[in-house]
Amino acid sequence: MGMGTWGMGGKYERDSSNFDESVKILRAGLDMGIKLIDVAELYGLGLTEEIVGEAIAGFARKDIFIISKVWKTNLRHDDVLKAMQGSLERLKTDYVDFYLIHWPSEDIPLAETMRAMEELADKGFARNIGVSNFSVELLSHLKRAKIAANQVEYNLIERSAEKDVIPYCKENGIKVIAYRPLARGNIASSQNKALEALAQKYNKTPAQIALNWITSKEIVAIPKAGSIAHLRENCGALGWKMNEADYIAL
Ligand SMILES: NC(=O)c1ccc[n+]([C@@H]2O[C@H](COP(=O)([O-])OP(=O)(O)OC[C@H]3O[C@@H](n4cnc5c(N)ncnc54)[C@H](OP(=O)(O)O)[C@@H]3O)[C@@H](O)[C@H]2O)c1
Image 1 (cartoon, rainbow, N blue to C red):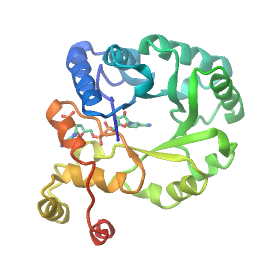
Image 2 (image 1 turned 90 degrees about the vertical axis):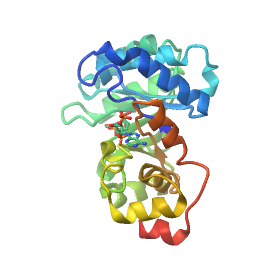
Image 3 (image 1 turned 60 degrees about the vertical axis):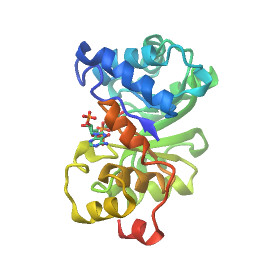
């Protein structure tokens, strides 16, 4: 499991009002052993990457796993290289562990973008390269061995990735990373009776059941917590199992 960061430092705009609090939450997560942080150049127009850079200072870089993403308007060859440099500067690091194409472009040829992504991998700026929001059709155009991950929306409510994307990724050794694993908070507030019954049975919360269900499939979940209480609750989704019948029922 990793930590999502959407909204820390703003969404489509820079908003520094939660800067210090966000740094505190991410540092607390690292202390709790959640070493993966998901971010993107788009988030807070770069401010979110600055928050991550601040949060990881003081931790051994090799122990932390950073995912960042290049936005779809920056998918021309030279723009990808420039975007990466910007991200590294804001993150105050020499490399990211996963660098993803955030969203496919309808205008810029994928082959051109991939050439730049592969250069970044060859130069060591990106330890692994991957994609996000890619369909099976788009994935099939890529040289599979080089694609380490596909980040897609997946949670107990939004299940469409199960149809073909997840099976395709599993068959081809592409790691699936589930974004919005809590359906933007809607799972916790859904008051779904079946979920509440399972939460009671295992003495967990609905959010913990929902995250445990994702990670049980060997899919990485990256919930975003805006408080230490939510972060701690989300960490409690790991390290235990439900009965097989309950996973199937979910
Ligand atoms: N690749 C992509 O295109 C893409 C798209 C969307 C998101 N993402 C990534 O995926 C991450 C996760 O997605 P997301 O942030 O949109 O949605 P999410 O993680 O499903 O949900 C976040 C919401 O859930 C609430 N929450 C967190 N823990 C909770 C808990 N234990 N109980 C109740 N509510 C809880 C949060 O509230 P508080 O803030 O109050 O804790 C927040 O409102 C993002 O942060 C981002 O890094 C990627």
